[in-house]
Image 1 (cartoon, rainbow, N blue to C red):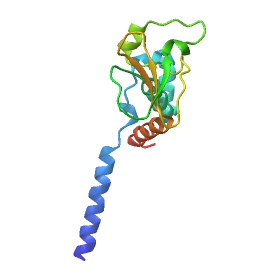
Image 2: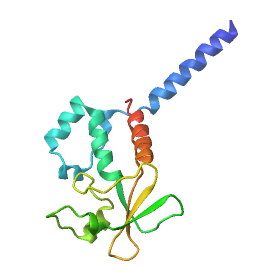
Image 3: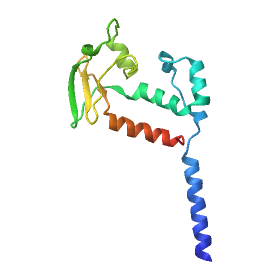
Image 4: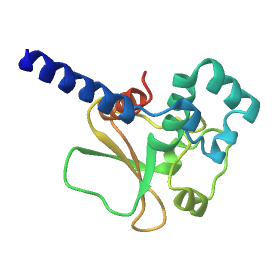
Length: 150
């Protein structure tokens, strides 16, 4: 009898702990820069009707291609300069990219490898844009979605 009660109590505590770790979609912070891609009305529509897609769009925008000033040893693939991948008719300022800390993947068509980090050199010495591998990106996105119960 004691084992049954103890087991039941342990299961209850585990469930309470799991419920406390899950975050509410209503508390999900959408960055103001997302307005580059979608309107605030669309953001609220997604929050109400498809919150997983809202999280996906927001995460994709800021975590696909990030700016770094230091490269690491590992599975890196040098892709040349960022300018080589500039969409036709588009202009940009490197200072803006460095200040923002990311490149908008909805505007730029930077290649994404399945398993390697693609590295694009900026003209300003010591700065790079790194595109996460598809596998790493999906793992991180899925972990974030899981936090919100998706």
